[in-house]
Image (cartoon, one colour):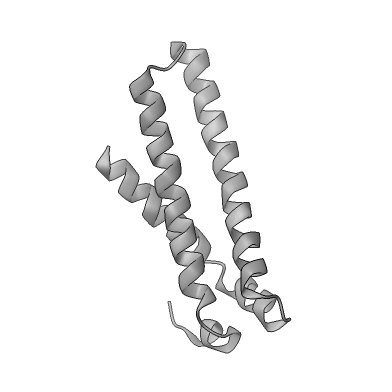
Length: 105
């Protein structure tokens, strides 16, 4: 379960960092730091809700109602995913648009 949480952190981090060019473009065009943070964070939140909702729906159809342990584990996954997204966006948000584009993978 800890491994699933770590994977959620890493995957969300990599998904956001892979979009450096879009982030730098937003910042370069004058978007405030809060606006760029919220834009990317809400996008990741929507993707998370779609994915988690689909997973829970498939679980419900295949095995019935999930136990309280499954719900807690799903909530932990959601928290880890959103934390990874917030961390990666905050790290990118500290730099200028030129520094973001100049950074090597």
